[in-house]
Length: 431
Ligand code: ATP
Ligand code: MG
Image 1 (tube, rainbow, N blue to C red):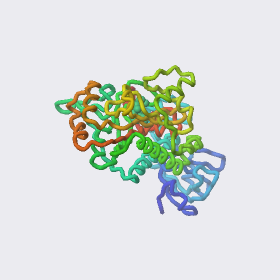
Image 2: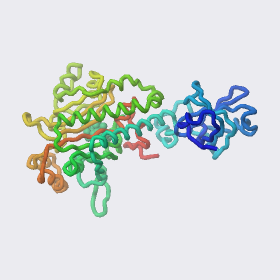
Image 3: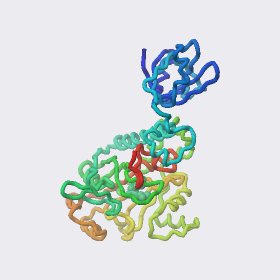
Image 4: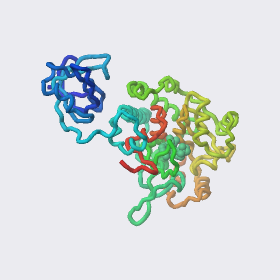
């Protein structure tokens, strides 16, 4: 007999098959009872009827518990009213392993801390399943976008000797006889990549010792970072909006079921079509002030500022030309107003905050040395980085897209901790 999965049931209508999984719930309506099976690919209702199932199976109802691992054998039929659209007329249930205690997560309300402490089990829930499947699709669409556009994957190292975003927020680790830092961003290495391959990207974990306990910060998160030779700020912004639009389109196309489980308003996502609005930092400050905020020019936007800005648009908004003082040392200065740097951030709609940070990089060796000194960073670890300006420097740009913030926005989940399988924050290292 064929063993299959719930996701493939359309191929087995009218046939008897075996499906392995876990008991999701049990329901009794008198002469027959129902078992909902979860197999990781979907949910399936099994109908257990006296005479159709073996006697042993029919009498199993009291013995089954949520999350017992089981094997179901039975005939598949199409049933629009059932979860997933199919139903199994159960012939036999075999218990693989019974649960030894009651499953700790029940349909009743649990606190966030309890659920997070049981993250290894919480991942089995319908909602967490939907979020992880969307994350999976987002990752694939990011890779597809770059691969389809001639970007070469160049993995940046995770152990580094230099700080990209300054020395605060760095995790320092023992590295034989010296110190190393966990990477905050793979960007500097992508700049080496872009001069070797024209367009490159990395996509991996980044680490920041963020002491803030916000809904948007993890200490370990994933970032996709493209870097492109001969690309200026303007073209960089177009790449960023094309990437984000492609990701949204792919999820809308393939994750209908998951988005509906999450009760996501997809009409809002359907509006995410290029071109996105692009405003300067100065214009953003004016918008904030016109809308009753007392934000002062020269500061970085906080979460409430980003929320207020995003409320003015129904697409992501890109903010460019930032005060140089609040951007990183490697950001190129504006040629007319040297107080400005050619940075750009993208803010997601609906108050989901910044999802992209990037810009055009400084290509002049002298200015770069000056900037590193100005930021009080040691020159020695940047020697290789300066070589990129010594040997055939070119205008180049790139950005970093935060995976978890993007998933949070797409799923409409306010807290970033649900968007990564095992979140790491200041207060959480387990499970
Ligand atoms: P923020 O100001 O929101 O802390 P940032 O300006 O420090 O972010 P960048 O250095 O520009 O962030 O990083 C690029 C992208 O990486 C951000 O736009 C965001 O999507 C993501 N990101 C940055 N820090 C975190 C974090 N601690 N947790 C999750 N995602 C992050
Ligand atoms: Mg940023």
